[in-house]
Every structure is written in structure tokens, then in C-alpha cells.
Image (cartoon, rainbow, N blue to C red; front, side):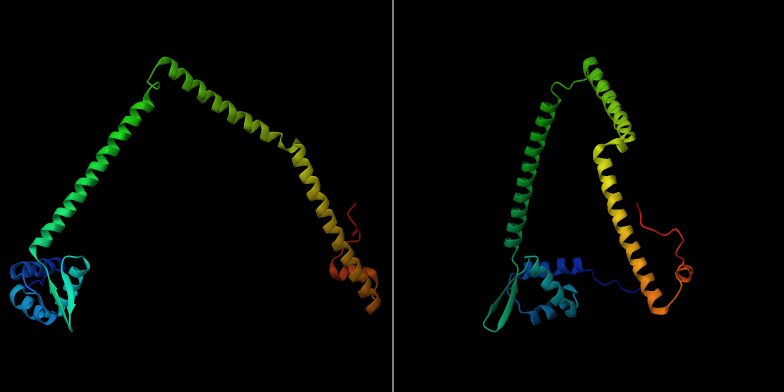
Length: 205
């Protein structure tokens, strides 16, 4: 025997709204938990969750009177909500229709003077040719970029900075060699060999 399927959330919401519309009265949570289970098959444990979702969606009204909280929903409000939603959709549809007409008019205006013709086709062809020519010239310019005075100046500046940096490190190496030689009485050739310093190590001219 197959197990009976429980109600989905939407089914519970729908049944609870049916309950309110049929009763047309005010209820507390405890009453709803008892009556909705008895009359609509909604388990008492899920009544609060379903009720809260309906209140959040504005489908069920609630208010606190003294120490008690009451819930209600009348068919008239549902009808008003549907009418308001329908009016909103109609207004939105009218706005979209107006926007569509405006866009269609703009498209028509934009097409004026752009109708297909032999002259227009020739102009487009000439434009494509100019674009290709421009791309070819840019490639040619790149070939001679190395001769650009600004590029040459930048390379010279970078070369000078690199030379200064190299000579500063050369100074440091000579200073360290001198310190080791005086401190430990090592021959310069021994120091060079130990640290892999070539015989022709010198400043960059």
C-alpha cells in the first residue's frame, strides 16, 4: 500500500486562505492550529510557518489586541489585491507599448538615408578599404618604432640607470674584498676564486 503524500507548501497556503475566506472571522494562532488541521488537513506543527508566510506576503492581516494576536483575511481584500495587481500590470503593459512605439519610430528615423543603394554600398566598401589601409600603416609604423626619438630617449635613460646601479654594486664588491683582505690577510686572487669573481671584473664604462 502506497504511503499518502503530504501537502506541499503551496497546497497548505491555498487551503489556509480557503479557511479564512470561508469563515470570514478573526482567529488566534492556537485556534488556527486546531481548526486548520481538523478542517483543511494542515498539520498543527506547520500552521505557524504557513501563516507567517501569508502574513509576510500581505495575504493575511494581523494585529495585537491587548495581549492577544489575531489573524484574518477577507475575500474582499483578495479581490482588491487582484484588482490592484491587474491595474499595475495593465499600466506596465501600456508603458511597454509606448516604449515599443518610440523605439520603432526611432528605428525608422535612423534608417532614413541608409537605404540599400549602389552609392551606399560603394561608400561602405571604401570605408572597409580605408580601415585595412590604416591597419597596414600601423603595422609599418611599429617596425620603425625603435627609431622614435622618445623611445630612444627612454632606452638611453634606462641604460644610464642600469649602468649606475651596476657600478654601485661594483663599489660594494670592491669594498667587501678590501675588508676581507685586511681582516683575514687573504690574497686577492684567493678571494676572487672563493667568491667566483672573474679576473676582468671592473666598472662599466
